[in-house]
Length: 67
Image 1: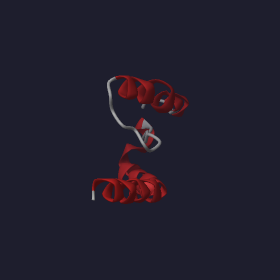
Image 2: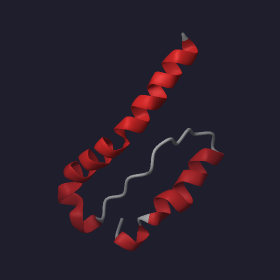
Image 3: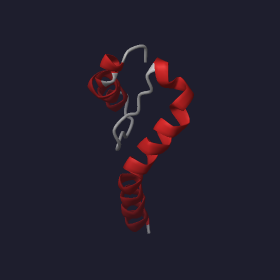
Image 4: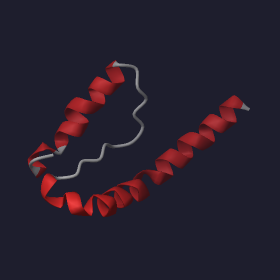
């Protein structure tokens, strides 16, 4: 994104759009400001660590219901 003030757009606009299209969106979105693109890997690693418990729980629940 061009400016950090645009970060809420991921949750306010993108999430509802994806849900309307039928997507399952279980975790908060990730946004990388343009001026920090060089640190994108670090930022996304931190995001992944934050959402990993949610994803693991969803996968475990799915494994239970499909068995």
